[in-house]
Image (cartoon, rainbow over all chains, first blue to last red; front, side, top):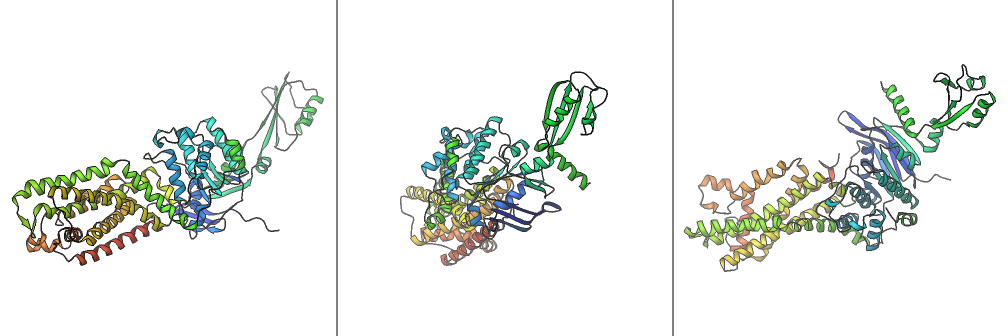
Length: 311
Length: 276
C-alpha cells in the first residue's frame, strides 16, 4: 500500500540572499495531522522556510508543495489551506478584534458566521474584547488574536512562527493545550520555537536546522531514546575509597571524596539492577537521584557537533 | 482560555460552503470595504480637511483675487478655477489614500495578511484603487457642490466627461500612489511624490490660469505637463471650454491608467519590495 501523500513537501528548496544561503537544498515532508517542531538558532532559516510555504518569501530554487499544489504556480489553492501566525505582532489600530477577524476571513473568501466568530473568540479567550480596538489589547491578547486570524479560514496546515515568544507561562501552557486540540481536530501544525520545552511538550517529530540545512529529522520519542541519557546519582551514608567492581564495570564514577557514585546510561536502560548491585556490594545509600537529558541538551549537543564539523 | 477543550476536541467546524463566485469576489470586496472604512474612521483628516483646503483656494483665488479679473475663456474667473480645484482634490486624495495605506500596512506588517491570502494580484490592485477612488470622488464631489453654492449656478455641461475625467484620474493616481506605497521605505518617500511632482505639476497645469495666454515657451512646456490634460478635460466637462481636445485628454488618461495599473500588478506579482 502506498504511503499517504505528505501535506507539505519541500524538495531541494533553497533561498539565497546575496552571499548568504538562508536555505540550502532543503528536503522535507510534513505528514497530515502531525505536530512538527522546527528548531534552530537565530538565522538558521526557520522563518525563511515558513515564508517559502506561506508566500512571504520567494524561493531561489527547488519546490514547495502543499497538498500536491505548487506554492508559486498554484498559490491560490495552497494559500487557502495554509494558516500563518507570524513571529512579529501585527495589528491594525483602526479596527476592533471582531473587524480584524472578519476582514481576515474575507481575504480568504470566507464569510465569518456569528457562530464561528464566537467559537474562535471563546477558544482564544477574547470574547470580552470583541468590540475592543486592537490597540487596547495586551501583548498576550494580540498574540492570541494573531492565532485567531490564522484560523478563520480553517486551514489544513498551520504554521506557528515562535508562537509563544514573549508570552507568560500560564498563557503559554494554554496555547500548548490549544495547539494539541487543533491537531486532534485534524490540523497539521508546523511550529518554530526557541523554547525547547515547547517542542518537547508538543512535537511528534522534530527537525533541527542550522545554516539553512536540515541536520536531523526524527520522531521526538525516538530521538530522546537514541540520544537521551539517564544519570543515576547515589548519595552514600559513609564515604568509600574505591568503587565496588559491579559498579566500576558498569562505568560508574566516584565523586566528592567518595560520598557520591554517579552513573550515566542510555535513556532506555534500567537503573533498578544497578541500585540492587550497589546494595549487594554493601553500600549504604542515604539518597538517590535520577536525571534525564532533555531535548535541550540533545539539541545543544547536536549543534555543538555541527559547529565542530563546520570549523 | 476557557472552554477550549470541548471546542477543539470536536475540531473547528469548517466555514460554511459558499458558491464559488461569491467566494471569488469576497476577497477583493473585503479589502475594498476595509480600505473605505479606514478612511472613514478619520473623516476630518481624509474628507473634510481636503475640502476645506480646496474651498479656501476658491475663496482666496476666486473671490478675493479673482474679483479684479473679468473672464477667462469666456467664463467668470471663479467658475474657471472650479474644474481645476475639483481635480486637485481628486488627484491628491486618490494618491494619498493608496500610498499611505500601503506604506502603513508595510510599517505595521499587516501587509502580511494580504500577501498570504489567496487573492489575485489584480484583485488587490482593484480593491485598493477602488477604495481610493471613493475617497477622491467624495472630495471632488463636495468641492464641486460647494462651488455650485458659491456660484449660485450649476457648473455642468458634458455629464459623460464630468464622470469620466474624475473617475479615470482617481484610478490612475491611486495606482501611482499604490506603487509609491510599495516602493517607499520611509514616510519621506511617501511625501516625495506629492511635494515634488503632483503639487507643482497641478499648480502649473492650468488650475488657476489659461495656459494659452502664457508666453509661447511656457505655453509649449505646459503641454508636456500631464496634469494639464486632466484639468482641461474637466474644464470642458463642467464649463464647455478647453485649450485641449477632450478626446485627446481622455485618450491620454486611458493610456496613463492602463500603464499605472499594469505597473502595480507587475510589482505585486513579482513581490518587489514586499516579498523577500
